[in-house]
Image (cartoon, rainbow, N blue to C red):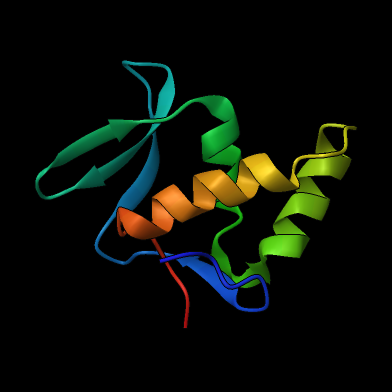
Length: 90
């Protein structure tokens, strides 16, 4: 399964993205466990709010971090997130 760039992305209601104070990291919590995220992964997932598609996420992050050329890295991470069930597309 790969990301459809035209559709919005939404974080799965079966998972929870939250800041874990003890670990000083964002994590994904779900009934079977927890996934620790690096800063860039968390920033991508925070934009999976049902209002942004791939291009909009790339644009916001490139603007936020004053860089360019993030499309391939963000797409690769979102494909992983989609295949792990962390995000959904309508």
